[in-house]
Length: 474
Image (tube, rainbow, N blue to C red; front, top):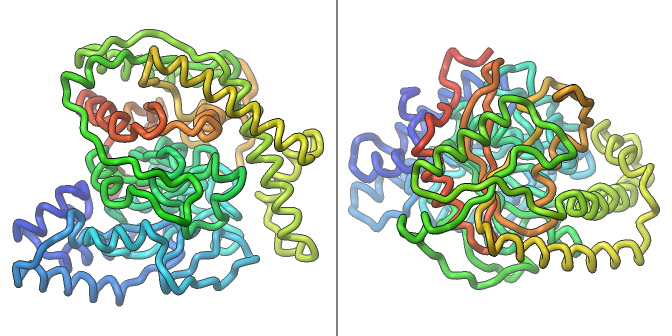
């Protein structure tokens, strides 16, 4: 039974269509995985077993009657618990929303269901999605399937843990500063941060509006790049509720055209050192793509530090401003992770209207200069994070003889939220302690298909990490 849950999502869909197993059998396999591993991982907020069983039965009836099937027919998926799923808790990890249950699905959830996916449940997040680990104010700590003493990342950490442990075939996370990509890197799975507006963030809390609409996106997470592509195709497209929505048509890239793209890579940004294993993973990715016929050259873009500083104004200082208002008079409901955001913002200048406007001006000018550099290298390879999955509660690390702090270690992901470029993560290697190491593939805005095509070739050319199987959880 467990073998079914370990298949890639695209093979699950094919197996149901071909009659090798039923949607009900596939669902049972995932429920067995959840029963076995979720007590160790604490990855789920809600498990909608009764509705999932009804939907699996309906999926099997559709097969028997020869009805038209969607590309994800019968495949069990999960959703981050900051995205509306009708009937499931959507609390965004904060006591301020305890018990909140939406009555309608977010547009992307409706699209998944139309594609035939079965929403099995939703997954844990930290308070207000604010950090790169998952310790919920409501449900406690979520653990990594690779080592229970380490975090699966955040804020889409429950989603990453569930997918990595084969409790879910794939699902949806969100990302304002690495919250899809860091959990994918920490948990040995794949993830895609799209261009803002390519996948509708409508129905997400906190809302991706105003300055936050420049940073915050929703996107797919799965164990293979092909699964990312399958989910992306099902949910991409404009929606009126997303301020960045644009009618970008789906595109394909043939191998010959793709290999004509020059690729630039860098192992570190010159400011935050990365571990030796991280450097090794970037070098391996560069070699694999060179062997696949690409021109791959060392290249570190200019403006990365400026992007980090501008991101900090909008994300850290902006979030601190909003959260102070949200918790006014309810400070006792505040959890420790939000307090860390306040502490991080305390040393920054006051977030005045003038400072916000100036930041937005500078962001647009910087983005134009950055995209000029990407005319030369339309694809970039770089680290996702300076370190692999860290231990619960760690706040600094000695990397290459230098102390790296909590808000700097994930700066390799923060730039691309500020710049609005798509970025995918593929697991490439392991650390000396056996932890996953991912590589980030970055493309130009609205070119998710190109990013995924390169990611697919990279995955094919490496011995990509397998997700944890039963018995491998420490």
